[in-house]
Image 1 (cartoon, rainbow, N blue to C red):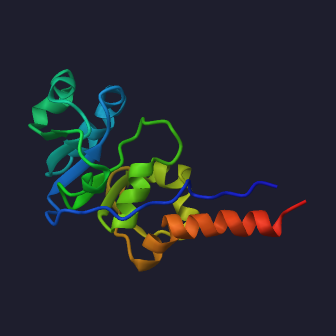
Image 2: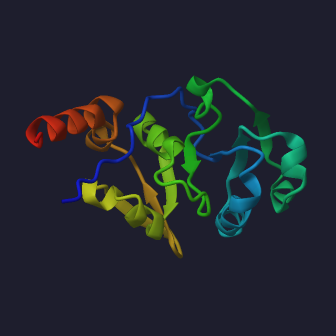
Length: 168
């Protein structure tokens, strides 16, 4: 039997209130892997890009520099969502369900993600509601239920229940 649990759960972060500011969280070593996905999204809509966790020099080596992003560098974990009111989960990261995605949903910010990733990360299994935004991109507006389902407390309870009820 396989039992699926959505990662380790998310923590509410401080969020910004400008839904026109789109936050991407990454690091210098990963940004080149996801730049194509970010460029694809931004070429189809109008957002002010904010890149959290990367250096300006790393961004200058990518096509993202043409979007004139605000580049914050490293910030405290509690503030990673504080630069905008929307979050983009770019494709190409490749490490299972990204913790920043779970944190964004747990924080209640609008999330843009490809429908393929929504399915790949199992968010459809949790009943997340989404609307089509652009081509393959969907928009998730977290609500109290979705925030709770991905909270660290709920995910920990799922793990505990599973082990208690399935012990040998």
